[in-house]
Amino acid sequence: MNEPAEFSRMSPESMGISTAHIQEFIHELTEQQINMHGFIMIRHGHAVAEGYWKPFDASFMHRMYSSSKSFVSTAIGLMADEGRLSLSDKIAAYFPELLPKQLDPRMAQMTIRDLLMMATAHDGAHYSKKTEGWTRSFFHTPATHLPGTFFHYDTSGTNCLTALVEKLSGMPFLDYMRPRLLDQIGFSRDAFCIQIPDGYSFGGSGVICTTRDLARLAYVWLNRGKYQGKQLISEQYIRDASSKQIYTDVRPFTDCNRNSGYGYQAWILRDNAFAFKGMGSQLAISLPDRDFLFVCTADTQSKSSGDDLIMQSLWRCVINRMSDQPLPENPARQAELEEQLANLAVLLPEGAATSPCAAMISGKSYTLAENRMGITRMKFDFAADSLLFSYANEQGDKQIKLGLGRYAEDRFPQTGYSGRKINAPAADGYRCLNTAAWIEENKLQLTIHAIDLYFGNLTVTLSFKDNAVSLYMVPRAEWFFTEYSGFAVGFAEE
Image 1 (spheres, helix red, strand yellow):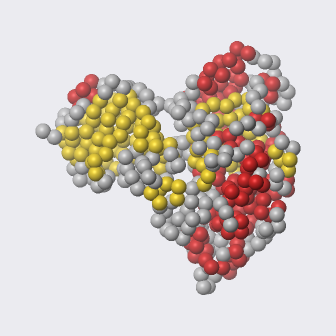
Image 2 (cartoon, rainbow, N blue to C red; image 1 turned 60 degrees about the vertical axis):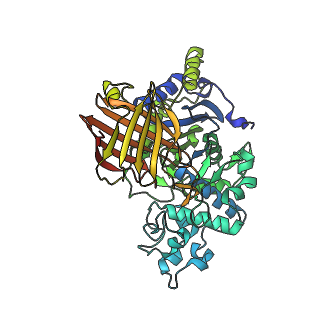
Image 3 (cartoon, helix red, strand yellow; image 1 turned 135 degrees about the vertical axis):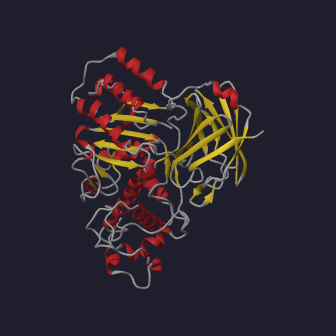
């Protein structure tokens, strides 16, 4: 696919950014052990730096999580442009078949605009992963306050907006957007969105596309609805969507988020910036005043402050030091940066690849005492640079391969996790990257990163003493790996 002219590569210095400052930014991310997957920096319409941590690359279809919400906002803006809806319309009027017999007047007052700015009349729809009618539950959740009064982050409202677009258009919301906007900006043809149990797209969290695709949409917003000089969505809608519509006074802020607020499915940051933000640090940060865009994909679910760490480094290393004029070229530094970008790889956790303990436990089987994970047996088979970890649980015998001093790719052996539709199991276990490291001479830590339609990680810490193994499992993922949480002890079999 031909890349848009706006993203053609130019040197950082020609765009007023020091190559050394970009290197410093990447170094800080590494020092902070941020699990990055990809990034692109764009200034004045040109990419000044773009890199991917292997095995990720520019073509990887990545889950965007809540950055998906900004796609839904864009679809609503397109429908408003076509006169198919008004932001002042009452959302309940579009779903009479889903309403309770006695609709609370506060629920009846909710407008499309209220949902866009996360100011619904309740504290979030009461549904779980297993609930079949997610859209219906939005209208059956009891009201707690007047709509439009308070910000309360609520993915169910975004899902309801997605259902509205799909009900009015008769097609998935990304398909509706394609001829009007997505196809015109070079958006990947094989991008798609996971579905909720109702069959509507999971607009609140489920868009699957490339890092550059996210940048393409964010670039439309940065340019007030234009792309390559063509107005694809009304300038006024994008201005409103990327401006503070409501004060987010119920959420704590970091320095980068001071004076924050919320627009239409977008976060308002310092320095007149705004952002698409998805769980695990799927970020698109736009600074219209500096004509600058930063987009990244990652999985920082194991770091509660992942977004903040990335943004603080971005501001400190790059944004606060940008020039509005070109800088002297620095060919030596630029060559260093290109080599650095070409050699990025997913960071290994701390620890050693070998330990004398490995030879003592390799090939041994352990019987586990009753535990909340339901794991009954374990076995560890070590090779030169890999570990085969075998275990048994209620699903039967399972095994997974992990690298030592490297990552090994495999499929996570637990089955039954959701695929392209929530609650509809995927055909295979999730694709994952796995490594093992000795964090102490007798303590082994397994790190498993799911890198499929669903992202998350699982850490298994194993302590070996005499003929016993103690273990602690910690999952960091949404709606999967849940079976693998807690402590257990096992003893070597004779």
